Length: 178
Image (cartoon, rainbow, N blue to C red; front, side):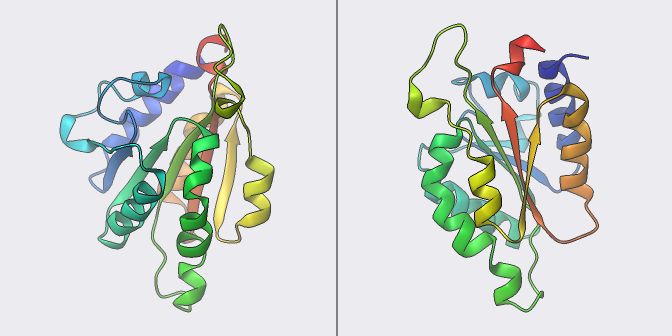
């Protein structure tokens, strides 16, 4: 199995759950390498959002509070940093602030941008997994570096027995390499 094919298969599997909705940049229209894994989803499962990372994370939380399981798509970790305040001060703390009464299921999908065949610039290739692990208490950070890691990571994020949100980090270089 190839990395890209496994991502595409997994996104299509996630879309079969009636609670899931895919939101974000290039979630519903072409624009980045991640869209290719979403291109065959039912049109009513994907919502394209403007490039406003903080708003997107706030919208993600709102959808989760309304009973959906949002899959919030951020093509680059460097730009997910713009939503890190919302992640750390709202999503990561909501369970503690409500004494465990509110535990929204959220999947945040992000990639380390590919730097091959053309380097896009340093603001597109950062990997902040370790920093995120140090910041978050309630959001689990998972890196998927092998094709066989992909489905189990997303399956756990959707079906996990504990009430945590999950940040899943893909590697954009592997879309064509593995």
